[in-house]
Image (cartoon, rainbow, N blue to C red; front, top):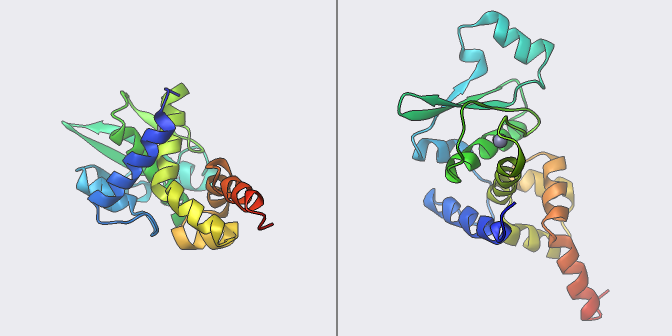
Length: 186
Ligand SMILES: [Zn+2]
């Protein structure tokens, strides 16, 4: 990941949220963002391709989460709508992060939040998607409130795993613990 990206992603996520009228402390709406950027979102089950739809929704539902596909002069995101709404929001946020970061791509397939892009582009998209779904300052506020992963997940409409990742990997809980220890509040 390039130097300074973590800081940049925090700022960018708040800017992008503001673009669609959202503050830091409310659920993110990746569908609204896609619409704002003229990116069409197509549901897998709407495709007129019975075998492919059955394969990705029934036989191997984890093989495809989403795909970012060039479409004429624009872009299209195909989403696997057999997944939970929380997972779909995460997939779509990841794909939109690639769009926001202007990552070069051919066709990318998200598989467990990994597309075909690989390397730094994937890490950057994951980090930015994380900031979009739960901004750092929102994670910090929830850490001060001693919110559980379940509470954070419900508040931001993400999976419990995603909430746990953001609360821990963002450093939010650690910062609060350290501050409390330093002030003798523990
Ligand atoms: Zn990706």
